[in-house]
Length: 517
Image (tube, rainbow, N blue to C red):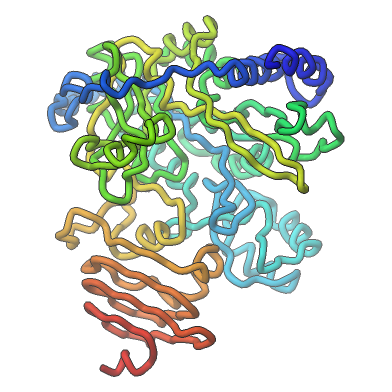
C-alpha cells in the first residue's frame, strides 16, 4: 500500500514546477518515511535522567573572557539565525511576526499620514500611501506588513538587529544575522530588511523549503489538483533549518568566512540573546549541538524535555509518551526541564549530517482542512536533531533566556513596567521581587493585538501582580496599578470600565459596584 502511494506520488511531485529539485526529493523522502511507519519507539524503562555532564548547569560555566581580543576572536566564529517563518495569525496579524508593529483602529486612506508615522519601516512613504489607499482595513485582518510593536515602537526584528549591532560595536567583531523565512514571510521581510542597510551588521535571508500539502483521500499533492495558490503549500517546520541552510548556499558561505557555530532561536523569543559563556563552553568542549533548557513550571508541562536514552541525549516530546505515562511526563518533579528552542549547532557537523542524509527527525503529522478538503502536513522540529550530533549537550539556563511572545497576554507582560529596554535588550525590572512572572489570562475579546491594545488606554503597572484573569467586555483606563491576585469578569452584555488611576489589589471585580468597595 505504501509503495503504491509513493509510486503515484513521485510523478505528481515531479510535475510541480513551483519548487526546486531539492525540495521535491526532500518531500518525497519525508512522505516515504511517514508511510513506512518509521519511528523509534521509546521504551519507558530505558529512560534515564541526564547527569550534569549531559545537561550542564549554567552557573557551572566558566565566566566570560576578560580579554577583549580573545572575546572578539570567539565571537567571530558565530552566526545568529532567527526562525522567521511564522505568521502572527494567532494574534490577528497576517504578516511576519518578527516584523510586527501593532496598528490600532485605522481606517482607509484618510489615515495614512498617521500610519506612516506609526509604522517607521523602510517602505517608501509614497508607496505606503498608495498601498493603503487601495486597502481597507477590516476588523478581521490587518495589512500583510502590519506588525507587533514590542517596546518603544520597536519590532522583534528591530530589537534583534540592535542587539547584534551592540555586540559587533562593543567587541569589533562581525556576527552576521540570518533570517530563515518561509514563502509566507519572504517578500515582506525583504522589504523591511532594507531599512537596516546602513547598520553595522550583515543580514542574510533564505527560505526554508516549500512542500505541497497532501490530500488525505489519495495522498497526492494538493497543488496538482488545481490548488496552486499559497493554500496548497506549507513550510515543513523548523527542523528544515538544516537542509535549507545547506541548499541555500548559506552554510558553505558561513564556513568560508571561518564561522564555526550558529545560534538558532525563534524570532519571538526576546530572551534568546548571544551568550558568550555558552559559546565559549561549546568551543572549548567541542560540543556539536547544544539545546538550552530551563526549569519547568506548571505552564510548561507539555514542553519537550531532554533524556538520556541508550547512551545518547535525546529530546522527548509528549507525542512520544505512552498514554500510561503522560501524567508522569507532565510532572515537574521527574521531568524538571523543557526545551526553549534556543539551539547552538556546529556548522561543519550540519554539513556532514545533511550531506549524509542522516537527520531523520521524528515526523509530526499536522492535519488541516483547505476549502473543505482534508489535507496533511508532515513536519519536523530542530530540537529533535540533537541525537544525531556528536558530544551533544543541554545547558540548564535561567528562565530569563525564555521570554516568548505567543499571545497578547505575553505582549502585555513585556510592554509593562515589569521590563525595560536597554540597548535593545528586554531586561527584567529589579523592583520585581518574585522570581516568576505574573500569570495572565485574557479572554477572547483580547485575543487579537489590535483589539487588546484598544482596550488599554495605557499598560497597567504589574510589578507587584501575582495573577490577572480578565473575561468579558472589559476596558482599562490610564495609570492603573494591579497587585496580588486580580480577577475581572464583565457580565454578559455589560461594558465594564476600569477607571483611570485605579489601584486593584487582591480584588474580584464583577461590576462597577465592586470598584467602589
